[in-house]
Every structure is written in structure tokens, then in C-alpha cells.
Image (tube, rainbow, N blue to C red; front, side, top):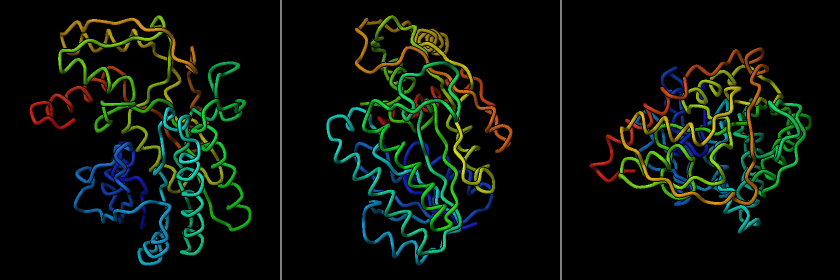
Length: 313
């Protein structure tokens, strides 16, 4: 297949590109390399074509027309909850208007399907766990709102334009290439601090839990969605919540370093517990998470450890 991966120079997108190339698909990466987005040119393999472009750009029409993709994997986004709260208009410009630009040009270029990176943020505080595809959606951040809206647009374009889709609602994705600086996932932030022999901050009492899913397992879900999951949304997680304290203790064991801990109060909007039930993805996509958390954390730690002497984080 011919596949355009928007955001393909980023953390999750670049792993999807790697997996598509491994199965001999033709891939074009479209990425703005936004400084807050984590996209890096060096994440794009030589075998993939690369276009430096924002998804809101009028030039997207030309790229789609010339490449003629069968599938678009849409992973370009404003992904920061904090930035979305500070600047909801910018968040909507990228995550809604950018999406519409991609969908409009997908229709014009004869794209068969869009695979969309959705998020657990569409749910907000859960009534009960584990979360499923049918759980109530009450997002509490502009980012979560735009991801929820995006899924409605996907359904509209399928019903009115025949553009198929599969939406993947990610849990807390972690792994190599995730930016350990700024607002990233707690695992990569902790790893960065451990490798630099620095202390870490643990909010609340550290017993709050989230569903951490390894990025290479997420890439496998995207590969499965190329030909499965027509017109549906799926939660992509492990089915298990893990506390921040467990993450900390695991990294102490992996690194051999007892990082000093600074306690901090609960952050506004923090959710006490979160876990997914990925059984629908297993039944319909044939996808199951295969990576144990400790193994994924060790692989991520080793990835950043190799780059520490080069100052490449």
C-alpha cells in the first residue's frame, strides 16, 4: 500500500513508519517538525519520503494528489494538554481544522481509509473501570474535546463521502524517541532524570494509576488497522493500571540509582485511576499488547542511555 503518515517524524508516528516499511509499504511522512511536538527529521528513515509541511497548509492538496495514498495514518496533532488549556484556539486550529484539511484532501485524492490517533483524553474522569469503547465521554481539556470532535468528523466523512476510518484511542504510550524534556510521559521524564542522576517529582501520593502501553505495540495496532476495523473506534491499552510509585521502583531496579523524590500536590485535572479493556481490539483487529511494562521500560531506558553521551535526548 501507499501510506501517508502525518506526524511521522514524531514519537508514535515514526514507529508506525518503521513498521510499515518493514512490511514493504510505500511511505511518505508529512510533518511540520513543530518545536513542541517532538517531531525530528532524524526519526524518518531514508526509505520514506519526507515533506516538511503543516497539515493546515494548502500544499497538502498537492502532496496528496501527487503521492496518491491508499491510506492516511493521521498522527499529526497538537498533543499537549497544557498547551490546549493555555491556547484552545491554536489547539482547535491544528486538531480540528488541520484534520479537516487532511480529510478533504483524502476524499479528493481517492484515499480509501484514514487511521486516526485518538486518545484516552476523550473520556475524562471515568465512572467505572476499565474503560471501553462505550464508556461515557466527558473530556475536561480542550485537547480531549478536539479528539472527541475529530471522531465525529470521521463518522461524517464515512457516511457522506465514503472515506473509511479506524480510530485508535491510545492509553499512555511510552517508549524510545519520546521526548523526556518538557511535558512528556512520566516514564520518559523519569528516565531522563535517572540518567542525569537527578531527583524526580511525584505528585499526589504516587498511587494514581494509568494504563501504559509500549509504542511498538501501538505500531502493531496501526498495522492491523490497515485492513481491519472499518468505521470503528478502539481503546488501545494493556488492561492494567500501574501507579507512579511502581514506575519509580522499576526504574530504581533498572538503573541502580535511588533518585531523590520531591513530593508535590495533586495537579489540577489529574485522574486517580485509569485502565482500558482492549478486548474489542483483540476480537476485531486481532491485536493484543505483547510487551511487559518492565521490558518496555528497560528498552526505553537503554535507548536514552545510549544517547546520553551525545546529549541527544
